[in-house]
Image (cartoon, rainbow, N blue to C red; front, top):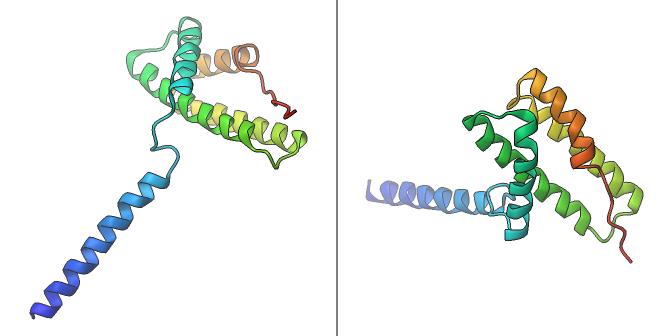
Amino acid sequence: MRKRIVRWLIVIVVILLNTGSLFAQDAYFQEADQEIRKASKKLVETYTPELVLSGNQLLQFESKVKEFLIRRSRVDAEQHMTTREQLKLLKRISKQENAEMQNILTRPQLRRYVKIKRKIQPVYVVLNE
């Protein structure tokens, strides 16, 4: 009986330890660096008057903008990708961001967001020199 309890405790401890490391490895749970935080705040400040976001929308929108800035920065940092591959990936990320914004914005807000996003956040590739 005692061995059985000890085994269960070991299994539970191992599961708990592994669960914590899984969340630590997930990029979206890690803190964004200061530069990305500043960039996301600036973008949200630019979009807010155009989209007239409510309080709850504002928090969700800011979180989503930060998430996708992190994704874009990783693409920009990739050394082994060609410019064409980077551009394709950035376009795919931009489309995914638009799709995920559907869960946050109303339809009129989403239409406005997609329209002004082309000017505020154009898809670009940083060329490595």
